[in-house]
Length: 331
Image 1 (cartoon, one colour):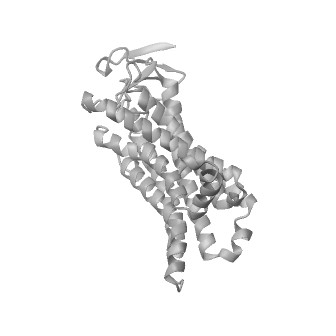
Image 2 (spheres, one colour):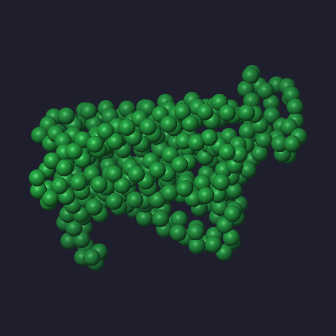
């Protein structure tokens, strides 16, 4: 192992080596700047707000898992996919929010290199899996509404399991190569201008030109979002066409309510991610980008369970029968 150079203007101790053709940095940890742009008096309120949203999100997603596993009425493809969405939401918020909350406390902003890379990979793996799963859920709603008589034959258990397995395999492959390239980078600064190890701030800390990695990230994000969004849009075109052909207004309203929850979640998830990731970096990761990231990491996982439970007639009925009836103090 031979030391080649010291990168003088890259910051203290930012010396990297080349070992068997691989760049290695001497940095042992990163510092997440988090919400340093906020005034000090606002930080306790923001900490409490994020904590409350986190607890409600965990409670809502755990409620869905409990209901689906405990009630035979919910053992159908739609709720199987919803269960997997809740699992992804739980993984999503636990990947970012606990470290975000820790960043509000003294000494809580540091994160090791390994933990940072693990957080970044898990974040994008769960995110990509969520988009593919939302596309499958839109296809499921298409079959249920447009071909109701053939629904049991088409969406059988084996197909559902294969679709869910394909979601995780595709997400693993999509995220793997860019993540490996980022892990091999030398970093000239350990200051990450975010509340978690997002890819854009990490690339900005590199000592070398990362334009090829940025392009690879944009292409991967675009393919993921566009392909899954295309499946969703095509499904909803046929769904809307079928709904408009229903003669009664009551029938239209009831049919539309079965997919409106999914449409709302899709709109929020795609809107925030397209704004954040399908664009080149422009020299800095702006503070308002962090607020958009809050929408992706906190708000969407919170809305998923409550949108699906509070707007779903069958779920509300089961909650009333199994919980409110047995525990009147919850009324």
